[in-house]
Every structure is written in C-alpha cells, then in structure tokens.
Image 1 (spheres, helix red, strand yellow):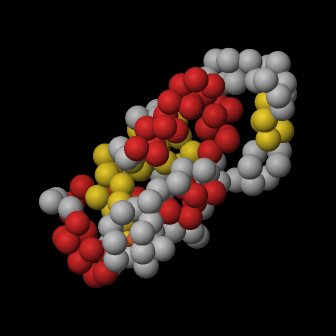
Image 2 (cartoon, protein in one colour):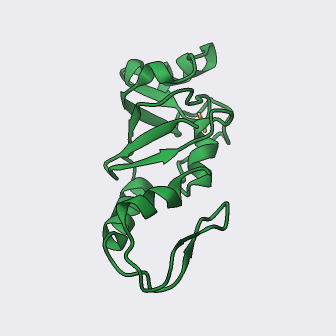
Length: 146
Ligand code: FES
C-alpha cells in the first residue's frame, strides 16, 4: 500500500493504489472540495504535488484540460479525483480552508492524553486507550486508508 505525506500536517498515511486519491483521502477524513462530484471537470479537488510525481498514475486528457482551465501551472497540480498513487514518496500540500482546520485539530490533539478510547474510523481497531498519549504515530494511523 503506497504511503503519502501531507504537508503542512507533517504526517504520512497509507492510501490504496486501487482507489482514486480523492476517495482514499475521504476515507481518511481529509475532505477536499469536489464540485463536479469527481467527474474531473471542476478542478476543485486539485492538490499541489511537492515531490514524487513519478509515483502517480499518468495524467489523462480530461485532467490536463481541466487543470489548464483552472490553474496557472498545471505541472504543479493533480486532480485527486483522477489520480491514483502507485508508489511511495509522494508529498502533497494541503492549502484550502478545510485542510487548515484539520491541521489545527491535529496540532491540538498531538501529545495530549486521549479523553476517551479512539478507534480507526474504517477498521474499528483501537488506536489509543482513554488516558494514554496521542502520538504522531497514532494520528498517522487515524488517517491511513487501512
Ligand atoms: S472533483 Fe471536480 S475535478 Fe475532481
């Protein structure tokens, strides 16, 4: 399962190579805007790629057209609804309002004691017991797609 890094959160998460990135991020509770519902036509789900672009699926014509219509430099962005992560080493930069809110939540949770048991939202596995420290590793597991 490929591992990506999300900045400025500073966390790494596992994503499924079978899913489009937008779906994996949604499972991880990173909700990106998607005005066209993942049809590849609005450009609102675009993320800036900082590193590892060669570990992303090839860009198709629809994605190129949409990025040309919505971004100044299409070489810096990918549409998460049209892109799969096929290898390790990809670093994305989250820069919209919702992403900043998530970063603030993470900053508040990290290195605090869990007020109650915290479970993985998909697998249901217990990540941290009430009263234990919420570490960076636990926050990364919380967002991972597994
Ligand atoms: S959700 Fe519209 S382009 Fe991705």
